[in-house]
Image (cartoon, rainbow, N blue to C red; front, side):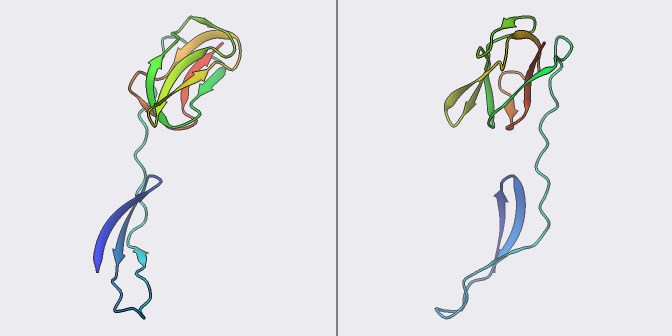
Amino acid sequence: MKNYTITVNGNVYDVVVEEGAGSGAAPAAAVPKAAPKAAPKAAAPKASAGAAGSIRIEAGAAGKVFKLEKSVGQAVKKGDAVVILEAMKMEIPVVAPQDGTVASVDVAVGDSVEAGALLATLN
């Protein structure tokens, strides 16, 4: 028997694998040894320079904040890049869903974010 620790989708499992006794034996099976451990929590959002706006700009995919294109107080048009994320060596612009003014920027360059994470808000 061999013990392994395996991470699947952020969940950590300790498993025991038994080796088969020959060609007629059933294939080795992984048996959960412990309940999954909770994935680490994301860092708390950064304090924004102003009050949060009513229009949320969220990450479409998990990645790392590569660049902040806009700052609090700047006017944006629909489709303007607000934050640039890096995922799998690609730069992904996260754009304003409509015209407005940046009310808060809730991330900093270098932050890791999950899909759906709040990046900024607009008024």
